[in-house]
Image (tube, rainbow, N blue to C red; front, side, top):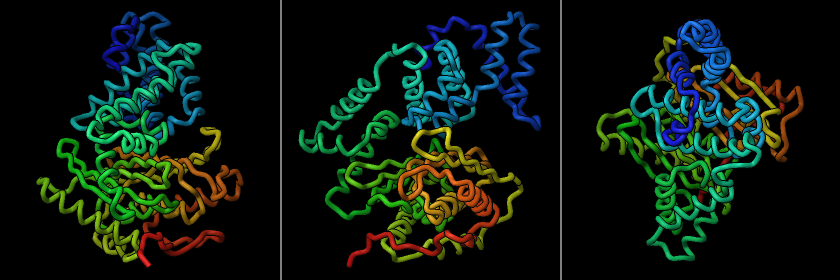
Length: 418
């Protein structure tokens, strides 16, 4: 999409200068976006830009991370997310410039950083925001894009009979079609079709040597603790989760896709490792093993890290009209996602969507949650307890809940046969 937008950009000079300056303040102790905008305001007049162009460059530099963060760390199916983003962008011209800058910034980081999933999220965010900024005009409506995505998938499932194809399309909610690249949809469809007549739990492993990841797809009955247990199985194998996609289907099952850091150079070795992790997942969900035992073995092997990042937990009820948004940030480590999601389950939080991001040694995970009754978390005492406990989890790996009102211990998942 950015290659299409570049032809309509009028402020080419603004775009080029913003690309040159967007990371100019990296390495400074303060936020590099804010410091970079200040530098841009001084440099742009010296480069021949007028006041309007200088203001636009400074805005692009200051907000150059906003679009990627919104796409990857926020629920873009939530209307409040789109309205907040549109309010920050304000015009379609600024949206076009920010889209191009964002794509260039991500692709320039290094090999394997850009992928189809990130591209699809950015396209969806752009197309959801466009009508808000143009008074209703858009290249295509949400309904048209949803219908087109369903149609493209249906056309590629040519070896399926009509009834089977329609039944499968009805399994997924609209957000799945709008945020998932077609190639991934096809892989998911083949996996789910193969698992349809088998066990209630199914897994599949795929390696990607170019991106340096191993992907594990898991199909299982949905459950508030599902993500926590999957993360626990990965942690028990010493695997570090660098990304996760969580999809709930209309039949009560969940499709979770975990992206793990690669450990071995050879695909055959990495596939065996992936199958071993899948075995841990099956053992945990069938009640044949415990998360605590698996992770305790790995914690004794951990080496001290040379990095120190102070953990931060924020709880926001303004980012969504339906959900409380919990954002955790701190030093990444094996088992962290498992510890955080288990703590949330122990705090009686129901995770509706999760947005997992890793930046080197730093992790930024965002969860859209409700209480067990499906309502926001508004009590100050409860939000304070959540904040303090999640901070404690970052600083004390494997610690058990001690706060009053928090449920302790393992719970059976319910897949074991009678």
